[in-house]
Amino acid sequence: MQLSNLNLATVPTHVGIIMDGNGRWAQQRKLPRSSGHKAGMNTAREIIKAAGKAHIKYLTLYTFSTENWKRSEQEVNFLMFLLKNNLRKEFERYKADRVRVLFSGDINGLPKDVQKEIYDVQNASKDFDGLNLIFAINYGGRDEIIRAIKKLTSDKDFSSEKLTSENFSSFLDIPEMPDADLIIRTGGEKRLSNFLMWHSAYSEFEFSDILWPDYTPDEFYKSIASYQNKDRRFGGYTTGNNDE
Ligand code: FPP
Image 1 (spheres, rainbow, N blue to C red):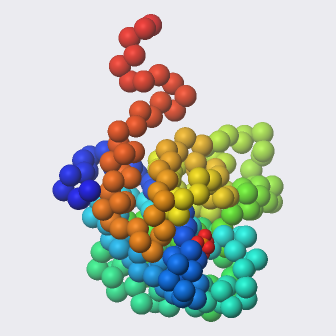
Image 2: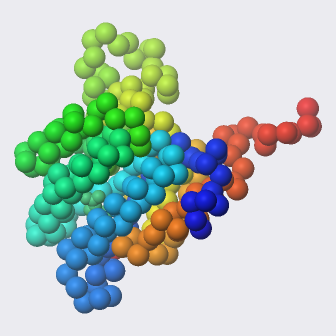
């Protein structure tokens, strides 16, 4: 599916992606898992560009979960290295495309050098008005909610009696982040895996069997087009319901 065939007036505001399948992609080629992550990073670059071209406002990439620490030290270190280098290397492109880079997750739990890169890129891109690109790193949906509750209960100016689902969002990692309209998962599994739990209450889901390193902008646009054909009711009626 080409960009030119997509109706840009109705693209989702916020797309989240679970980039799964790097390990299997590498295994199929008898390569180390790190090669799969490297190839996955190249796919991420193409999809970020594709999202910008489609005028999507928020793109969240599930880059490292709170559960990923269970992987081998070698793999964790490689992912941290890739992340840090990727942020530094891609910055000129982000600048040219006015991409504002944000982070979600427990950033304090990351190695200091990665944290520094994160804060540098976040700062340097804070006034850009193109795509809001969110890397979910050391991220877990439950962890985000628990950290929000801790912030809320330690805020002396906030009485929990005033709590609503709207103002609760202001305690989440990125208060302005809208609900995810569409969540895409590659790699064949059909589950949320602790991604964007708060923001996915009404999300549409698109699952692809393609392993993340093989995923393409054409496939991404296909998922967007399929989302556009869905009828989103948010618990209400289909628009144009005349029964009443
Ligand atoms: C899941 O594949 C992928 C990850 C745990 C890491 C995601 C990281 C990248 C795509 C590369 C880094 C990207 C950026 C933008 C810095 P898996 O390893 O769980 O695959 P498997 O299920 O086949 O084992």
